[in-house]
Length: 377
Image (cartoon, rainbow, N blue to C red; front, side):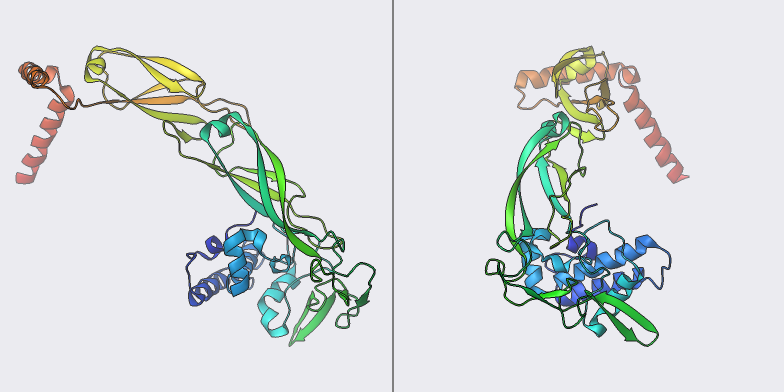
């Protein structure tokens, strides 16, 4: 599962002030606090997700990077223990989230980040591309291991030294009353070693920002919100860590003719009043070409005609949906005097036939009369 937008997580606008961000975070923290939801893994995940979002958006520098580049613009250390999405945190992670401000560290478990952050890329497709499938080239900004120092953060040829804070363990234990909390060492960030001579290319961070061009195959039949996972194409988690994944999320552009609902397609077809009254044939578009619909005489407006197998092939089970064409009467415009006279003559002739020619209008008139009679009584 890919990361949600941080503003969406907190339920605020992108223009939200610092006080609004804090208020939104406190509300979510109270709602999903582990002490109130013991044994609820979903609440625990929501609690951690809200904290991560607030940690980024409440920091002006990180917020600026996130607003410009999205998740790819945020340093790896800002993630949820560096584990990306889908990694379950332990009790120590939760207490680290709660008491991080007291102890001066961030929650975390292992000596090293076990996995880099997952990334999400929104890919916009036309309806035709989504239905037929396509291969797309995309450019993804991300944090990658520095090529100069191979991700170590040290200048080539130099050595690191054992961290004085955690003595090489990568973790520190804090005591607060009855609570004993084990956290990632804030000095070495869980590495157990610190850089003494920083690499000039990455300033000792071990990672640099770059862009990678990837080819992603979109299977036929994908729908709005579907995702394609590219394993190992996310962000680096640092030395000895597994790279995160990239989730390509599909967005479908609005179509001029069709609307999609699952595997079915819908379109509206305007036809003339004489064709609706007398019947005939009309030509309609489909994604695979043209088709013909026979219109029975006395067809009413907004009637749906179903074309089997002219919809979308389901990407999971292979079943093909249908195309539904809704016919609507097109009222004539820019009429000449002669045309207006003919329509008036038709209206007069139809009125002489009473409800026989307009049963729905007759029924409607009767219901209106009954309604007002009931109001009077």
